[in-house]
Every structure is written in C-alpha cells, then in structure tokens.
Image 1 (tube, rainbow, N blue to C red):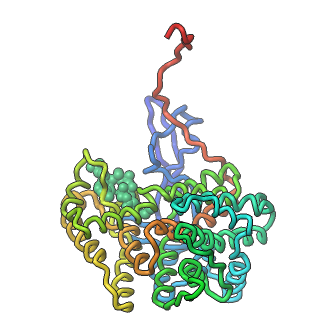
Image 2 (image 1 turned 90 degrees about the vertical axis):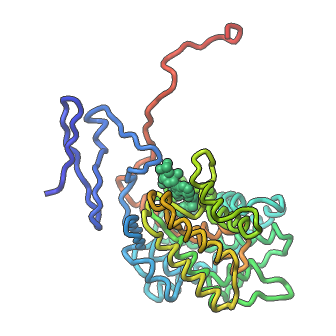
Length: 428
Ligand code: CMC
C-alpha cells in the first residue's frame, strides 16, 4: 500500500499522498493542500521542494552519485563523446550508431550562423561579457528561426535541438574572436563537435590550430560533466520560462542568464580569479578560508559547497583526476593546480567546512582544465553553458511532453503593509 502523510492543523486532519521515486526518494504531494486547508507551504529557494517528476538525471547528494538516464557519469569518462551524451539526455536512451551519425550530421549542417546574426557582432562593444552575448544571441536566434516557435512534430524538435546545440559553439567562439579583434573562423564540417569549437576559437588564417586528442577528450569530458544536473537554478529557470510555453530559444537564453551568476556557473571564473590572487601573492590560502568563514564578509570559498551534495561532488573528483592526467600527458604544469589542491586540503581539514559538509564542486577544478586548453577565463562559464544546453533542452522537452504540466506560479506569504489609503502628493 502506498504511504500517506497525515497532517494535523488545529482540529483538522488530512491525508496527503506520498510519491516514491525509482531510487526510493519520497515526497509528500501537497497539490491539494490549499484546496483542503487554505494553507500554502513556505519553502524559500525551494530547498525542500520537488517542482516536478523527472526521468533525466539522478543525484544522491549524500553519497556523491550522479547518473544520466540511470548511467553513472563515471562511465562516460573512458571515451568521452559529448554528442552521444546529449542524445541520451534528450531522447532518453543511448543512440544506435546510425542515430548518432544522423544527429552528428545535423549538427554539421547547422553549424553556421545566419550572416545577419554574424553582423550583429560588429555592434557589440569589444569588451562585452561573452555570457551577455551568448544569452542575447540565443534569444536572437529566435528572430532567424521563427518556424520553430511551435514544434509540430518530433522532426521539428530534433531539428531545433540540433540547431541550438550546434550554433551555441559558433556563437561562443565568435564572441571570443570579436573581443580579441580576430577574424571569425567559420566552422569546419570535417571536424567533430569539440574539435570544431577549438578550431573556431583558436585557428588563425596563417596557422591552423592543431587539435591534440588529449585536449579534445578533456573538452568532451568537461561538456559531459556539465550536461545536466536536475533542477539546478538555470534548469529551473528554463523550465519556468518554458512553462509559459515560451519557445526553446527564449527558454535557453534565460537559462544562460541564470547560469552567469557567481553562485552558479559563474563560480568557475571566481575560482580562477581567487587562485590567481593567491598565486600573485595578494592573498594566502589561509586568508581565503578565514574570509569565507567570516559571516560579516560576503566572500565565499568559490568552487566549494552545494545545495544537494553533502559529499564530494563526483564531477569535481573526475575533473581533479583529469587535471593530473592532462598535465602529465602535455608535460605541463600549472601553479594554480597546486594552490587548488592546497586550498582543498586546508578546507577539508577545517571544522567549518567539515561540519557544514562543504566539498569541492564541479567549478573548483574545471577552470584549471579549461586554462590548460587555452580557453580564456571570460569564456569559462560559456563552456559550462555549451555543456549544459542538452540538459536544458531535455528538461524543456520533458516538461512539454508532460500532460500535467502547468505554468510555474509559486505562491507567497505577503508581509507588506495592510490595506492603506493613497495620500495625495500635497498631503505627504
Ligand atoms: N564558502 C563559505 N561558506 C559556505 C560556502 C562557501 N563556498 N558554501 C556554503 N557555505 C556555508 C553557508 O554560509 C552556510 O553557513 P551557515 O549554516 O553558518 O549559515 C552553510 O555553509 C550552508 O550553505 P548555504 O548557503 O545554505 O547553501 P546553499 O545550498 O544555499 O548554497 C551554494 C549552495 C553552491 C550557492 C554555496 O555553497 C556557495 O555559495 N558556494 C560557492 C559558489 C559556488 O561554488 N557555486 C557553484 C555551485 S556548483 C555548480 C553549479 O551549480 O553552478
């Protein structure tokens, strides 16, 4: 028999159903609570609220587990292929070879930007933040692909998903070229997804960028590890915007805006800036911890802590190991990696972090790996967004296919003044 929750309020006693997920998590279904009692629930920042049912990603934050469609992320690290993972997330199962080939072909066919869109770059200030460009340009894609506002069948959905996943690389690389006064590199149809991005970022007319397998694999891995993370801030934003039946371009553009924040994807920039400050002698690792613990100081130890993980973030673990491997293969070193390790060691031995179960998250080591590829700091969060896009698309699709889905519209507890009269200007 299914569980029920009994709620007693004064002399009223009501029964609420308890939902059970496939991994045994339980949730009290309060959808009829207000109807039955007149009460709403209060859960600021949704720390204790499941806003939807989802088949896409499973996290066990206590054990440090992350799975895409049931598959542990560790299993994608051997031969990382971001496009395959994107397909898995969006369509719900691993693609067969011909399905993956067809989807890759679609990505290739859609890699160019409309020339009208390309020209818009010349009107953007050279120092414009790439995340602002990304959000604006994803929104602008809607002007050039209006036939996808209403997705009439599966074919139009696959096509719009491919356009977004393909063009996001081009948009990102062009913003980097623009900010460095470099000519745009058109995508090369002979290159795979990550290699093509690196080519658009780094080739110069007289010197083709040489793509090494280690770097290509590392970028695939970074994108895969960022590909979905259930109902995080940007994904919830995509779902919220999508719940109003806004198109996929507008919904994903909103996701980029949420991701930009330093408590979310923007943390990867904050981490590197913090490590660089330490490296240049402006700050000692111990100072960072002291400031992070000081409640009167807004500083946080960026790349540490997570709403869901109360254990080591499995993505951070993979990235940490990957840093070691990539630097060893490239026979390179980065002093920031040593500083990051030192900071981690100090934090994990400090009762403030231990008691609060604050561990490194995905953003702690990702920037060090991106630096090794030559990706500039202001493109780090853009790389997070490229990786996260399939997750946003998968979540948007799931929401649109759910017949019970309604517009997102939380309630509030009003704490403003009681009814009061308007006072004319001359009497105030
Ligand atoms: N440095 C110092 N103290 C921290 C940190 C940190 N990085 N993270 C959490 N705390 C403290 C926090 O002050 C609070 O202390 P107390 O109980 O004394 O009030 C306690 O730990 C619980 O933290 P919280 O703020 O309630 O946690 P949250 O779930 O609201 O926030 C977070 C999660 C990720 C925003 C937060 O841990 C944080 O600000 N971390 C630094 C930013 C960061 O690395 N963000 C990337 C997150 S992972 C990738 C992504 O999703 O984008």
